[in-house]
Length: 517
Image 1 (cartoon, helix red, strand yellow):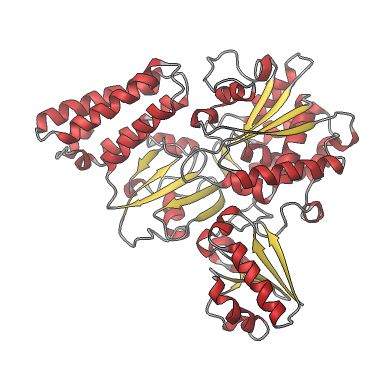
Image 2: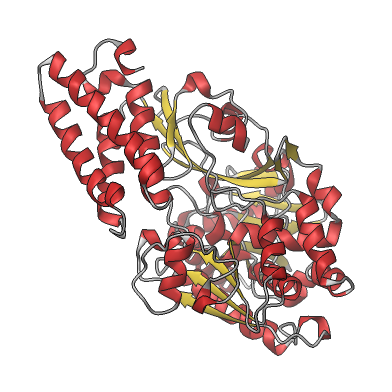
């Protein structure tokens, strides 16, 4: 019997994976050919989707991207010489894009069925929880602290310090909240993990609850992720039925619930998210008090994003020292970088911190999809800096990126070719901020609107002196936004604006490059 694996990931489905699976089943039935099709998670090699994998004595053999019209010829090859097919990729594990990665979080990606507890167990699932159950809560917290894990949502705050703070807080009720409101353009790692390996996130939240003394967890998912929401709800039901929500029999009843956002970008900010969870309009809270002390419903709350919580089972199962061996400086472990935009090979690349942006864009991404020269890469979402090719040799490390006026954020990298208008992108960033601001603080609420007006006047003028004057005002406005805003929404909006002004002054009609320094 032929055994095939086809991803059920929403990106694979969007480009025809369901139709290919159905066509294969129909054609095999017509030929009376025994065929088993399993729907697995995605490898994250999105330019090859729909990717069909054949189980063989030499491991999984890949074919892609496969269309419905390719099905008859593919079946001919599968029963004869699989390597003879035009779409044959050879052993999937040997595809260079995948072979050179360091997959910890996505070690099961493309291999397991998302909602199979048997598959999860067979590939190391719940080993971290079992180890955590053997330790004192303070020892679990110490392991997270010793690992060097930092928040993967963008702020990069040491996770262990948060855990210790919530653990030491005195309260009868504590919460663990997963921020799965993955709103940044060009990012999809959270969605991939929730759709493809939901038990890993559940395991991470169980360990967190055990360590900090919380008995309730919420996963706050953006409404634009219906497939992830459905998978998570079913995975929680399966975990509950299997007894996992009573943390390894330790007597701490821990339950999980999925809550769905209503489309507000600002709810990716942790305090606005907590307000939304409480049934209020998502508005940023002033700090202090910190959510670790007064968070959801005024109780101590551990808030992390998906990738942070999903890293925890690996740390507990394999040890803090193992995790700490990946990365550089204070940026330890791995990060799933996400390549999108005008890129030839878009997809997920999990590597230890320290590879360069050039390696990511050129070696993995293979340059622009258009074939035109690269103009810049926006790193860290819609409010990330535009990094020019001259800075592509900068290591992807939190501190190294900050030194060049950029940030890693959630690991999203959006590539652009030389046709992109950077003045238009700077305007878009300010307009985006104006539309998505919660409105609580003046710099963000008013400054973003004034910034759009400034750029409009700057690019509409033919007077060089006036343009320079408006550019100077724009830089001053960026300083006000960066240092005067209540949260990162307004504080980060200057990154794409200031970087576009600095590196691409000609796009603003500033003829002299030195005028933009």
